[in-house]
Length: 208
Image 1: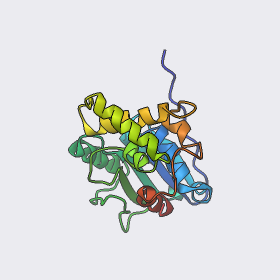
Image 2: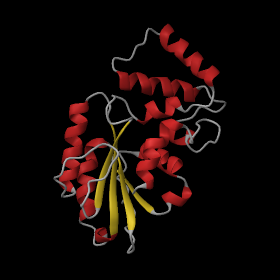
Image 3: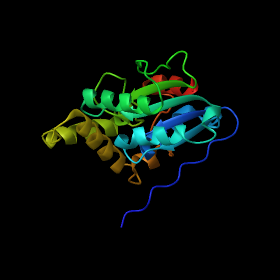
Image 4: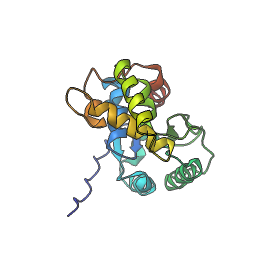
């Protein structure tokens, strides 16, 4: 039997930045990249998958304290279909009553609250947060071994996004303690969280 979704945390009655993410890994990455000072000023709601983001956005607007939100940021993965990802963004923005076109990584001017969208990895390439994390791994020798494994296996994944996820899963499985991504983001030696690959996401979170 599946567990019922957790109730999102309540909104404060003072100004805050609202971050809507597609899942737990995205939430953990944002928390790690933002740092405690920035994160303490944000409220993060996670969806039960990217397709649930419009519903989560609509639910947020119905909260009595939504008016205290100074900004709303939406984070989702591009995955393998940019057209589908952009359509999902449009549905999410519509749920937030935003009709202006969006530019990846920036906030719509004049909106109240201001609204911005970050499509990982960079708003253009297919992929996900896994793409960013791969660039920031701390063990280049192990990364080379995983590259060899993927080549030896005949590059079995049928899409770029799946291939990146498979690569990162293999890398994390070869730690002294096999880890999932959300666990690895809590360990200091797995990723360089100050890596330049995370800078655009960090700037987006700081602007919330």
